Image 1 (cartoon, rainbow, N blue to C red):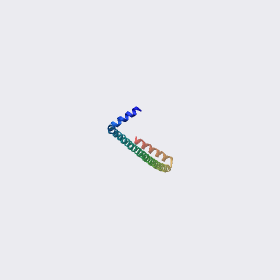
Image 2: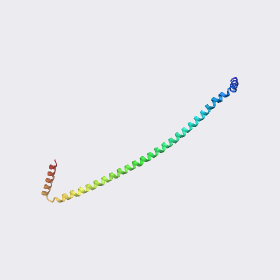
Image 3: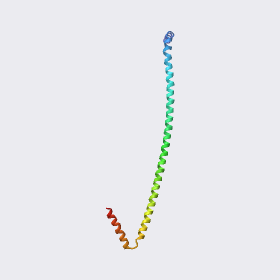
Length: 122
C-alpha cells in the first residue's frame, strides 16, 4: 500500500500533466471506437448490397438462359417443320416422276438423261 500512497502524492502534484496528456488519449480512443463502429456499419451495408446485386444477377442470368432455351427450341421446331415439308415435297415429286414413267423404254431414257446430266457436271 505504500506505492498507492506515493502514487497519490505524485498525482496530487502532477495532475496537470495527467490531464494534459490523458484527456487527448481518452478522446482519441473514443473517436477510434466511433470510427470503427461506422466502418463496421458501412461494411455490413456493402455486404447487403453485394448480396442483393448477386441475387439480381442470378435472376437475370436465369431469365436469359430460359429465353435462350426457348429460342433454341423454337428454332429446332421451325427447322424440323421445314424438313418435314421438304421431305413431303420430295416424296410427291418422286411419286409424280415414277408415275410419269409408263414403260421400260421410258425408264431407260430417263436414266440415260440423268446419267448425261451427271457427266456434264463433272
